[in-house]
Figure 1: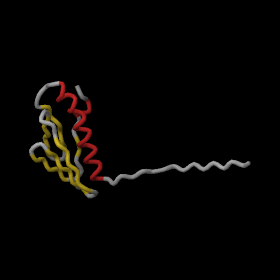
Figure 2 (figure 1 turned 180 degrees about the horizontal axis):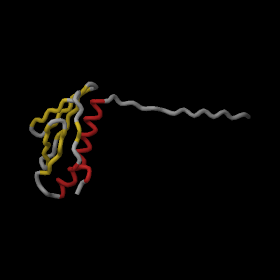
Figure 3 (figure 1 turned 90 degrees about the horizontal axis):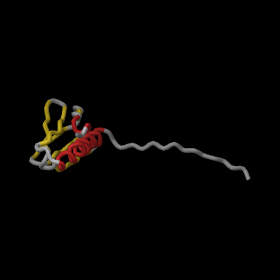
Length: 96
């Protein structure tokens, strides 16, 4: 049983979610992303939360349950906040 898949996804107010057939589209201030949803799963959207639901109890559905939730959560985070990478510079001076 996936502990990750059970958690709801909080959707910020500046992110729009569109569910069409087997696809989910996430649009935000920094871009737009799309993902295909496996036929074993369904997405329930109410208020400002997304919930992943298994339509059948098979091994394949259990495998994809947590994965799809993580992918959608990363999509929501990605369109909301721009990617940023911070570096720490370490300079060593060696006297010869």
